[in-house]
Amino acid sequence: MDMYQNAYMGLPGISPEELGFLQQATAELSENQQKYFYMIYSGKRKNPQDVLIFCIVGLFLLPGLQRFILGQVGMGIAYLFTVGLCFVGSIMDLINHKELALEYNRKMAYESYQVAKMSN
Picture: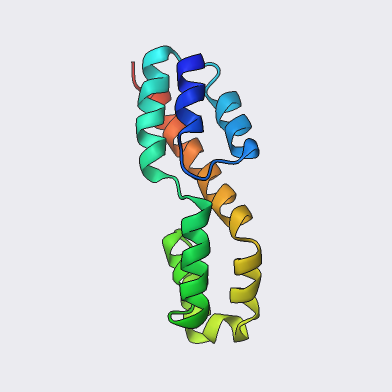
């Protein structure tokens, strides 16, 4: 497990909350399952700094871009047609970009865990 804790630390923009969540989620996986989990999860997760960039672009150029990137298509369409919910929603997303990324990454960790658990 120690090798994978170090691997998680190499993920860009990882927070202590995310690291703790990942360690707790993968504690009961075998070594091969942990490798598989890391491979899947590292490809799906979003860096909070990237989410911040998408929020800035969403605020000035394409309202809702950050929501589309995070898989929230309905909210993305709502932001697009209401100009970021009259800019208030886009500004709130800009402020809360770390929480948006953490929520998305938790969903991806859960999906990755389910796939890794089904492997040998």
